[in-house]
Image (cartoon, rainbow, N blue to C red; front, side, top):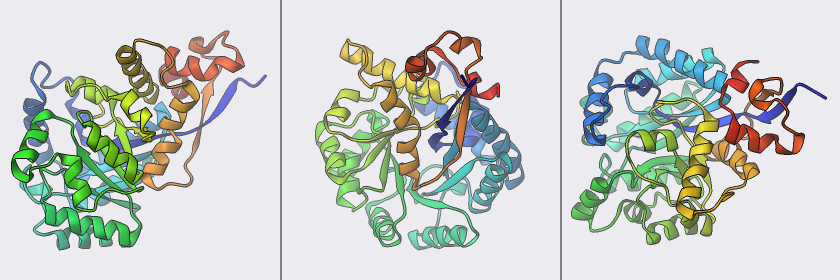
Length: 337
């Protein structure tokens, strides 16, 4: 019997690598207070610090079993190139989800126009970087930006990722400004389709979920970050009833462990449903790997191996390995190889 188990690599479909530096900071405050700390930290980033720090974060991801990452990047054009260099150095496949930011945040996040944003996307692609479109949110992008980005995504067959329905205040502000909820606004602007991934959707209502199901869009859940920031619970059974595909992301990178993300996802589902085995282990592994690859437009990504000699897997039968990995192990079963 082999002492190693080969598996598809995990795919981290939503990362803000610079936020790894914030772990332990602003604890005890709410999401919006944490966001102010995040903005302050982002202000001081440079291409050199990103190249150095992102490489360290991506090496952590690689050791934890992530072999591909979607970096949702909003801290500058040259910094995006540095992120791609860091991923290459760390041996991780990267899709740079380059963020559009018209308003809010801080100045370094923003482009002067949607045409400037799309020109930057073209330039990054011309530099050999695999890119995706990422209107940051309906807070950051007005409808005319969303409409133009939606058309460009369709024309160029690019993936489109966007934060939506993470916080109740975000929904209240969208209703006040536009008269509709965030995912309804995205649908109206032409941003929903089979290459769309909604990040979070924690507080999406039934009509919004119906829109996602009809469009064939995915949701990227980020359970460790959503727990850390007090975002709430993803409505797992309502998503499954509509067959909305899920993938995972480490988001703020407060933890870097795909098994923990999957365990937290299923744990949330069990608590809400008051039963076990809401999402079977084989499906959890698809959520952690192939569905993330689909969200990033990847057809190939490196595999990984689990060390069956690790004490956490000692005595586990072949037929129970997937369940044991999700519910009884941490990422060290990959890092130890």
